Amino acid sequence: MSELAIAYHEDFLKHLTGRAHPESPERLEAVMKTLAAEGLLEKLPQITPEPASEETVALVHKPYYIQWVADKCRAGARWLDQGDTVVCKDSFRAALLAVGATTGAADWVMEKEGRRAFCAVRPPGHHAEADRPMGFCLFNNLAVCARYLQNKHKVVKVLIVDWDVHHGNGTQSIFYADPSVFYFSVHEYPYYPGTGAESEKGRGKGKGYTLNVPLLARSGDEEYIRAFREKLVPAADRFEPAIVLISAGFDAHVNDPLAAMCMTEDGFAELTQIVKDIAEKHSSGRIISVLEGGYDLRTMPASVLRHLKVLMA
Image 1 (cartoon, rainbow, N blue to C red):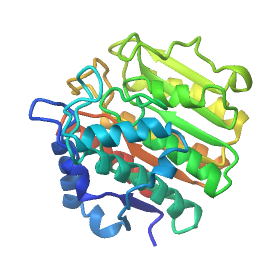
Image 2: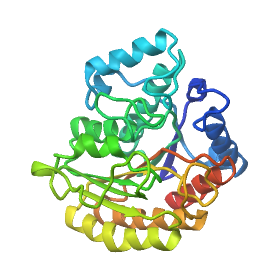
Image 3: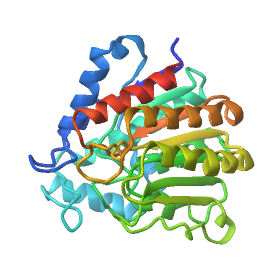
Image 4: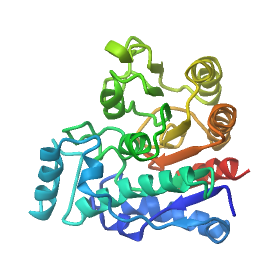
């Protein structure tokens, strides 16, 4: 049995955002075609998710917000915010499936089917707050996964590593006062959504459990790897997580149209190896990685492929 499983559902492609929108079904189609061409879909176990229950989503999101998203989608609304979070009638189900992919991955990993899982999902999640959509995100897939791990599988401490080029404001806000979830983010700054300053370190009992490493535009592999080695690794050693979750956005790539960073496929592979080493040391190798951003249809799938090859090794 492979150590790595892939969670995917073809209904993710039914979340239609329009021809000009960067978070398109073509992103996920390109990823899956690349994995198929490399033979990974034949080699790796597949997790076919079921839609998460609204009760599960409510581990993080306010019930009235969940109902509002459902009502807006079913009524045929085109936006949930000021214009970037586009939806259609099938978007609510796709969002529940995206959450369900992460909880299915949690069951896979914690029930010892394998130690690692990658969730090839859309819509993405790390900008979604408890009661607010934002930045293409409806529900915070990774945040619900963390709470599900704590509630169902009694995981005490969760480390979230977010290397999407945009700061995960939603994930940070959800766990900002919580010492049981350590949130680490490296991101372009100043940039959308405007959060993620180094001074943002948590609140109350959660103070010291948020670690932001803002980087200037044009930063690349060297700067990211240094941040991981000098900031993340010592923090993880102090925290000693029981599992590691990755908000795996690949939009810091030098070719990505939505950012101004200079990461390469080699860089993403090295970041993955550092996180894998952390998990091997503290978490019995357990990792759940969830797709976030990445909008170049050639280099994003190539980066995902390198990421998965490290997780498979």
